[in-house]
Image (cartoon, rainbow, N blue to C red):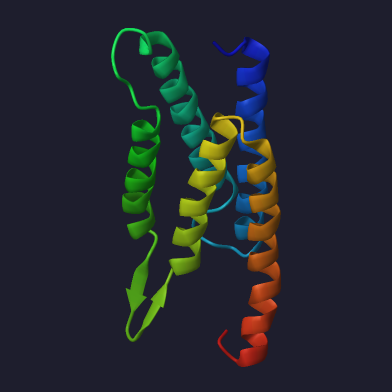
Length: 143
């Protein structure tokens, strides 16, 4: 069973990493910004922690798969992301925001199960993609 300090560390890691992704979106004046990404990340971490907790409690009583709840997060976030995508005439807006929400959920899940290295490296890569690739797209005339 995880101790209180480890639970706190995992939740705080998810807040910080999800918040960093959300801050980038907030600075770009996107609909889903700092608070939304932070909440998605901490919610995912909490769900993962709950899944691990349930597994720990019932591992000797019943066959429990801790990954099943996490897969539900990814599905549920998909519905949230669908609401971020809007069609305006011949163009579509919100795809990057939707993808950010989805990947932020994954960062939260990684924090929730204690996979900090992957969560931190992924957050750095996500921020690079959002910053550097945006400039590359401008150079190509896409934005």
